[in-house]
Length: 416
Length: 138
Image (cartoon, rainbow over all chains, first blue to last red; front, side, top):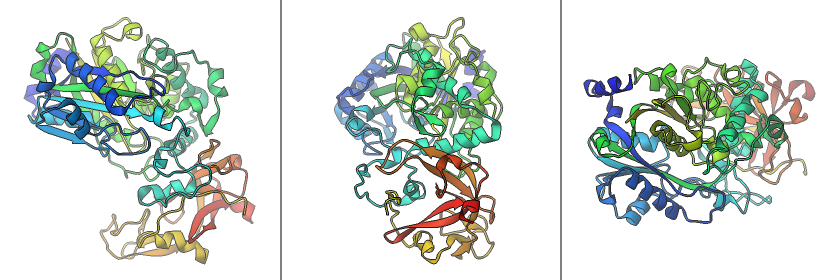
């Protein structure tokens, strides 16, 4: 089925996606407070990805990252592309870094576009975080609080731009902005905390099988409810775990695939649409957020359907977000994600739709979108070890990043 | 006053000053297209509905309804917890809404659908539009 789809790639000129494969992946050490610099971690991940792709640094002719240097709060950004180019002495035909786009994976989308357009043959793409080390001393900040210098009642700088519409109301964090979405979902559809807890419990169960995961001890429903309330309905265990780590991958022209000594992930389709107002609180439907648009867009660019998907790696910066992605990608109807995940069997490793098989950001750590891509590729290659989806060859994986007004999706297929 | 929480202040400029200072006159104001009547929030220099460039602040009733609410328990800013963050919608226009706080009642009593009305909390040169239950404020 899948190979037949691939042969069709050349027939549809708009399908730039299928001109690319993810030929290699790499990851640095991942952990809490590693105490290593972001560039150092990025070099580890990049060298591993380049070697895995079967190329040398001299063959890398493209470089892309999210969100680019200097963005966001402490430890959020990682090194910018010029720093990585300098460190690895790359000679580039194309390079890109930026925070505006279809969520964290926009850097991968951009690389796929560059390869599809013929601007580059091997694009190194990376995402690096050192949020654990850099937030360690002062406790976790809201993502809107970067550089505010808050805490202890000190005078903070004044807030302009879009954040003036939420931060002055003490809505500092994506936890607040997305809790408002979740509360509305609970209200409209009868979604419950017991249902939402299954995202966190499933993630922890899978993380127990992942040596790179930061939280591996089993979690029960009682443990979940015993975790302190951050902002209703989000308990601490609904919120992802800041870590230090870098994930890198190489997007290569499809012609390179036969040169690689392992299966690769073919890019089948991307979803990048954003059709509502691009705002945390002004988006038309709080219960779907922008995932609705990117999810629907994805399926317009492929002949595959949700029924073809063998594994789903869906952003869980907050547990609720994975639920909205299940709906946005059509695995269940609008508002039906609560009953869909109830009990957790359907989304477990041996279930009908294995979800966040590495432990997600909730338990494997907040590698900020790229951890899901890395895991999808491992699953497609059959290299996920103890957490490899059992009983079938993973042929199709869906990956989604983002929450609120930020959303991107990608469909990957196995090419042996 | 001890019960006024720490707040990050907005940076006032020519586009937003009308909004953040409206409370001095005891009213809530939004930008409104003078051609088609559409309320623009957050403010924009051009009406996205009709393209009109003549936009001006206008007072609204200050009555609204809680569309969603979260009760924060985590300590972010050294202020008091818990507190209620809400998205409030307004009867003047279906897509007119804003994020704010509901005060004047225990935060856990704030529910979706609650009728609220604007109240203002002054900090320096800024009047924060907050909301309080209609019944409680009598």
